[in-house]
Image (cartoon, rainbow over all chains, first blue to last red; front, side, top):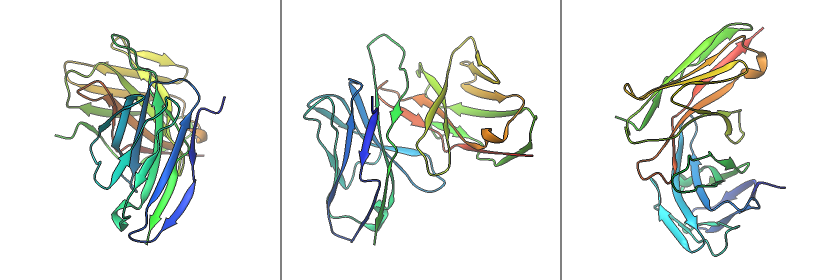
Length: 116
Length: 110
């Protein structure tokens, strides 16, 4: 059972380039999330998905896009990379059932992105 | 007021000490709360959920005060391995995602 797998672990991009951060989970979790964490800061929600085919913006969605074509995969797309997008990106998943407590997240190991 | 606020620390304590972290949250409708642990350059990992009645897991005790919108984490008999950043977490207003505090850094020394 791999949990949440993120690739790549590290990447350096030039300004204006684009890339896709991959995230896959094998726990049959319905919810998936993308966060970014800047040094000394908390995690900020970029996008989330409550199920296949459904995505919603979080706190800091500008400059990013996501898709959720399957339950397992939730890729994050960066178009026209900017230095402000230098950060550590974490993907997470959870099982959420209405009228039941949220059981918390399982995180991937993160992608360290530098835009130069 | 930020959604989840915590004292960033750092808290520097000797082995064996008892240390307490506090956190406040702004959304009175939040139903679920957690403490996560994050080691340097690693992903956050769930430490424990926080229940209204308070809950204990070994040396760790979490308390929730809904009236004051206040959450605490108590660590007894600190170990070197407890050195990490502790993140206070609440569910967002829509109930769809977690809101993380910036974290409190703990350093335990021998």
